[in-house]
Length: 409
Image (cartoon, rainbow, N blue to C red; front, side, top):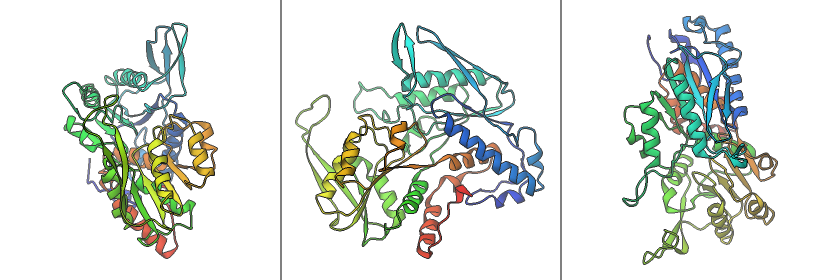
């Protein structure tokens, strides 16, 4: 395959490489996030077209390296019983296939025995297995991009009577021949221990979220005197530490004081919440969490912070599901409790969410395109996955007043 170099902040390393793609690149998307996959395909085309026109390297001439459209359309036939089957519109023989799947998309429904049925994460997972089984005997390699990992919060057993669904999922796709799995911001990175022989990459969305926050709000000052990072509970303290250490900001934590003498609905009831951290009076606050599910935790934390006379409160999370709807966030925004909520476009977002004044969509398409581009030619993605140096560079640009986004170039 020739020499290998880590591709990081730019494409200049390609000029010294004489590589061949692992196979013709093909992208399959079967969930509601097809617009995202289309954007990734378009970005790949523009980058590779530019590279082919400006660099005399042998690998750019390989069949399938430059295509106007990398998407391979898939057709799903769903029966009244709820069962289904997949078919592809073109062959994937010899291809390096990337399957982009969003198990959280909930805007699709089917008729199941005459009753409406919303496609669930379990349904999406079965559809993913159908695509894998369709490709496994023909494709040269199968890669899965699953931003929100299926059953990612079922990552450890609290007792003998709890299923380890995430581990079972990882082992199953590995047994089917999946070579690489790309997951964003998992609830617990230790899930990779389930399949040590499968390539699993865990990129963070922090760089894009932080750069979007800075570009959207020029008033925010990222120093210890003006801004604090908050973890809404003790389970997310590692995530809070990452943001705080990267931004050189103090960290505060809300600790849940639980009653361990009994359980209600299977969990120990919470007596009260205690804030551990510096004074928040007059400071901007950045709340970070791994996902916004119902949003109760985020809003409760924001309300407690506002009582301490914090200035602006920004809620950051890679995945915004909003299972309880948007009314509570609308009210929190109208009451001046929250300034903005930033989530990525890695999963489906309901159209009404995108229209909210308090919501800012973080575009991850260029980042995903860069990862696919690198993996296809078997480059190391270490620097691309590790966001530490990029965040440091970003903060340096902020200090000198020059902000640019490397993935948008």
